[in-house]
Each structure stands twice: as C-alpha cells, then as structure tokens.
Amino acid sequence: MSQSERGSALVMAIFVLALLTSMGAALLFVTENEMKMGKVDLRAKTVFYLSEAGLEDARETLRVINLAGASDALRNSFDDELTSAAGPNGTIDCDPATLRPLFDSAGDPIGFTGYGDDAPLKGVTAFGSGRYVAFLTNDAVDGRSNRTDSNDRVVITAIAAQAQYASEKVQAIVERTGFPALPATITMIGPTANFDGGNSNAKKYTGNDCAGGIPGLTVPVVGVIGAASEASAEAGVKKPSTYTSGGFTGLDTVTNVSGSIDPSWTSCADLHDLARKVRASAAVVGDPSTANSDLGTTATPKIVYIEGDYTVGGGWNGGGLLWVTGTLTFNGNASWTGGIFTVGKGNFQRTGGGNGAILGANFIANIAGPDGVLWTSDDCSGADGLLGNSDDGAAVATYNNDGGGTGDTGYCSTAISSIQQEFPFEIVGFRQR
Image (cartoon, rainbow, N blue to C red; front, side, top):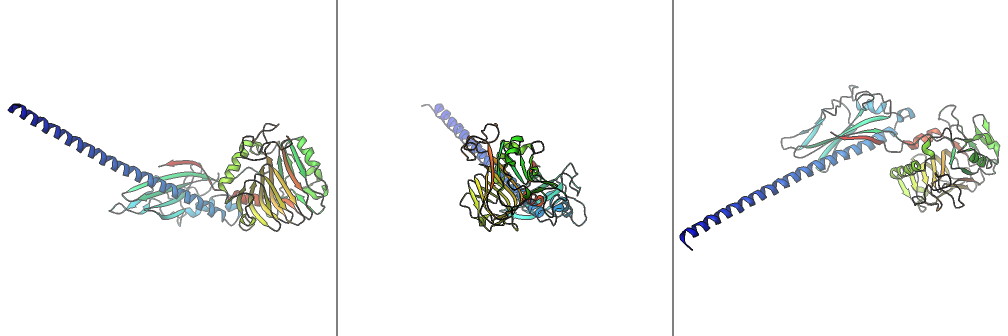
C-alpha cells in the first residue's frame, strides 16, 4: 500500500469513528430524553390518578354527610352541604379556574389556594407522596356560588399535587339517584300475578303511608300489570277485611297500575341494569349461605344483594334494601323496614307463625327465564316478550303468605327514601381541567 493510500485509510477511519461517536451521542441523547419524557408522563398520570382518588373520596364523604342530615328535607337536597361549603362569610368563593397548588422552592406541595374561606368537602389529605383536597360548589344550572340546590346536582372539584411542581385538577357533576317511585305496597310484574295473601284474619295489609310519611298518601296494596293479572291477584285476597288503602278495602286495593307505573319497572333490560347497580353498590354481596347477621338492621340499614335462594330467619329485624335473585323465604316472625326486591326467579314466600312486620315496599318480577336462574342466556324470554318464564311456561311473579300470626305488611315512604340514600351519588359529568 502506498503512502497516500495509508493516509486515506486513516482519514476514513477517523471519519467512521467520528460518525459512530456522533451516532452514539445522539442515541444517548434520545434515550435520556425518552427517559425524562417517560418520567414526566408517569408523574402526570400519577397525579391525575391522585386527583381522581380525591374526587372519589369526596363523593363518598358527600353521601355520608348528606345521609347524616337531621331530617328528610336536609337529606333530600344539597342546600345544607352548600351552606357549609360557603364557610364563615356565607359565600361560595371556590373558583375551579383559579384553584391551584402552592409549592416550596424545591417543588414540593405545601398547600392550595384560590378558595377563599370555603370549607373543603374533603380536607387536605396526604396520599403516597402527594396531597389532594376537594371542594363543593353548585352546578352551572343553579349557578356555581348559589347555595340553593334546585335539581339534586352539585359539582365536586378535586385538585392534587406532587413533587416537582406536578398538579392535576378534575371535576364531576354528581346527582342523587335511586329508582323511580314504587306504585304499591306489593308490586308484581308480568301478565299473571300469582298472589296468595293467606287465610289468617290477624294479617294486615295496608297501602296507607306509615307514621312520619307523607300525610294522606295511599297506594294500592297490590299493584299488577293488566286486567288478567288483576283478576288473578284478586283471587288471592282470601280475607278482604284485612286489606285497606285509604277508603278502599278488600279487592278494591288490588289495582292494575299499568297506566301509572314508571316504564323502567316493566322493562327487563332496565331491571337487569338496576340489578347490576344494586350489586355494585351493595355493602354485602352474598349467596344462600350468607348469615342473617350480615344483613342490615333498622338502626344500620344496608344494601344487600343475594345471588340464588335465601331465607330470612325468625326474629331477625332487618332494614335497608334486600335483593334476591332466587326464591326469598321470610319466616313469619322476621321483620324488615325498607325495600325487598325478589327479582330474578321472582318468588317471595312467607311461612310460619309470628308477628313480624314488613314496612316499605315489596317488588317481585320474574326475569330469569325458563331456567329460573338470573344472568343466563334465557333471561327475559317469555310469551310476553318481556319477562321470563316460570317452569310451567307462563311469566309469573309469585307472592305467597301462608304463615299464621299477624305478619303485617305496609307501605312506608320514609323507609323507601332511606334505602335510596344508601346509593352512591352518580357521576353524570366529568372533566379534566
């Protein structure tokens, strides 16, 4: 190789070395940059999830505060919660647009500002390496700073902060939800109501609202769908003198409510959705082996969802919402205050002597199809195209009260209202600010 060729090779080697060095440096830069971006993205996601946690914490706090209201009027609106949120000056100052975190010189959160003297719905709470706080304001329809709630909707704003000046803010419109009004003391859905009120003179059935309820309110004792179902249910009124509703007695307390009932009560799809909602909100999700002691009481009502058959034993004084997808059997000495939903197989039985009282409302629907099991492929199949079949091929809701004793059954609007208040407030609008 000549001298000139060796010189050219050296130049080429230096060039290649420089090129590889440049590529290595570029790759190192890209990798480092991606790592930094990944950390920023992770920090942004973490603080977003932290703000969501604050929102959920505040939503449950609002439910608990509202439920603790001293009267139905306070529990049925957000007026007192908005008044509390306004703070000492009586004005809701919190403006989500100006609400922001405060950081020290190292970029660590030390507090929040932009809410005047408002009382936080959820005070500053440490969670992991960050903090969150949440505030209550009215919705846009009523006006953010208005302390009067006209539509059962309010806004929760949660803000979270973490190290390195990271922060995130989320808002949700929440509203009170439950279910539509129940039209009767005992509501039975389907073209044929299999009703047997029993032969005991001591039993009492009433559609008059309970003490402390709505003055003058009366509902049918038995509400059914269609004339045929009404005739079928009337055949089960064996002691007419024990049935009262306002000025009506006996067979006149059995009513075809198809013209007044909320359509969601006669929609299998809607009943399926309500079952999912109850199961998701339940304090207890159980099966036939679930102990009665796990149920709610009148002092501490619960939402309880039972998959399959279930028996409430004698002497149990329960309260809240009880949803059973199979056959529900009540001992004659057992009591309940609230709502009983036998929806699935749609079979309610009350057996044995005793003086237990059921106050609130009882709703029965067979949507489980020919196999009698909810959540299978034949749900909602039936001759009427809506509700499920019983084993004999007819869509039937069954109520059988053949036990002795008093076993009173009555309507109670306050008991129904109280179980609706057990449901979490529903988020109907959400945004990240």
